[in-house]
Image 1 (cartoon, rainbow, N blue to C red):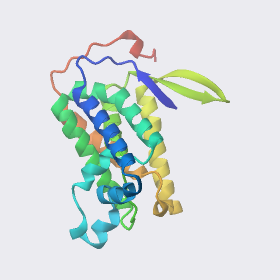
Image 2: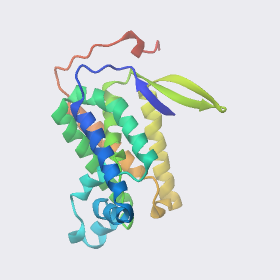
Image 3: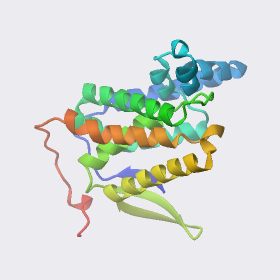
Image 4: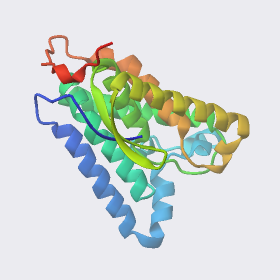
Length: 231
């Protein structure tokens, strides 16, 4: 399923969300411009779990945050920024800009440490905004469960546009991340890199726990009838 848009309208302009998107894009082109030096830069700025386990003094805390703004390819960048564009503006509207920024960074950091916990011996650098964005998805799951996510779904090689309740769309997404994370543990696939499933799980759980604490108490959102399914 590829999300295209949601049915929730923001009351304010999402300055922080756009800032995050722009910073991620700029960081991607910066990394691209390094050519052969991109790999050493990725190793320097990415999260390498083995550093914390084997030599804690060599682990740089700033990599927990710098890694959030780096991506390994066009598809990696596009999928993350699309999700942030669709879901982030509403979460920023709900939390307020400053709290949204702190929330985003916290979820990204939590995701990094969960990834380290499940991959303590990995010498591969982990990069990407997925962990932080997973926290954003969790906040959206809590704050806007009755919204609908308009998604592109290929069924039997035929493209379909479907309107899926956010609670179902994001619930399926989380279960798939958890399932793949457990599968990677059982199969030992984590040792060979790939998708950081546990970072996604960690970011989502962190978002579920922290988002209610940061939500503005007097927030009043105008609702629209087309957000709801007649269940």
